[in-house]
Image 1: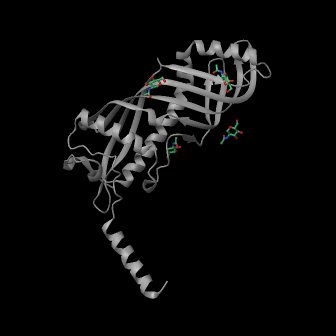
Image 2 (image 1 turned 30 degrees about the horizontal axis):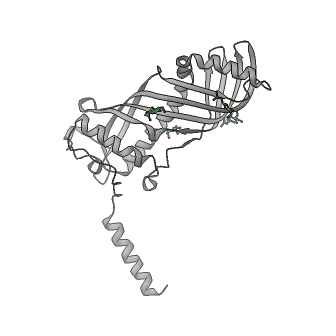
Image 3 (image 1 turned 90 degrees about the horizontal axis):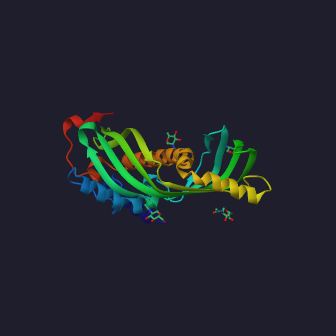
Length: 256
Ligand SMILES: *[C@@H]1O[C@H](CO)[C@@H](O)[C@H](O)[C@H]1NC(C)=O
Ligand SMILES: *[C@@H]1O[C@H](CO)[C@@H](O)[C@H](O)[C@H]1NC(C)=O
Ligand SMILES: *[C@@H]1O[C@H](CO)[C@@H](O)[C@H](O)[C@H]1NC(C)=O
Ligand SMILES: *[C@@H]1O[C@H](CO)[C@@H](O)[C@H](O)[C@H]1NC(C)=O
């Protein structure tokens, strides 16, 4: 490249840097100008299909499927120890927000939603199940239908040294309604005996509520923790003024 060309590139990139200090907000994010449930619910509904594709400029990877990079272990009744690894969660894009509310005095957002999830991966299982002493591993496929979730997120707005406000998640908690349907399929449950394996699975699946609690709980813990991490990345990238058109009162800010 000639010197002149090089100079032009430098000038251009300085201009772009100077005028685009803020990462532009994706067009599927529709900020609310009022604190109504209607607006927040609609905005969440509008945002989900876009966000699950990932937002590279915010460091957010695609979320559906979500590759679970940690082993998920659970202890089931009967001292049965189960671990999932190399697991993949499909379904975050299926989540439908039924109601999203802001409780501004408590600095809390409440999300009521329902989702369908499928988890596939490898499992290992050790312990006693019905009449069998198990020490086995194979492929797992778990389908969770219409899982209802209520998620409470406590957040505040923190001013950075440039004077920009950013949301920070203080804490979150969730409640899940395990009245939903869950189907569990495990290959090689009783080693070398597909017929008995199928029978045992049938017995397990007959009490899908207990199953949903035992299996669904650790999976939801992971998925929601992941989603909260992603949400914080989103808040770190975009300022309060970008994502909300509701003016903040002074007492809402905290200096970092
Ligand atoms: C995950 O589980 C697999 C199978 O049980 C095991 O080989 C692997 O070491 C575990 N990984 C971690 C990080 O615990
Ligand atoms: C979940 O799947 C069921 C059965 O396929 C379907 O009727 C329902 O609409 C789905 N729910 C969501 C939230 O995608
Ligand atoms: C469980 O998965 C295996 C292997 O993918 C399949 O052959 C079998 O039909 C499934 N069983 C049920 C009850 O879905
Ligand atoms: C969320 O972030 C925390 C802190 O960085 C980390 O310890 C945790 O493993 C993350 N959760 C998931 C599900 O990746």
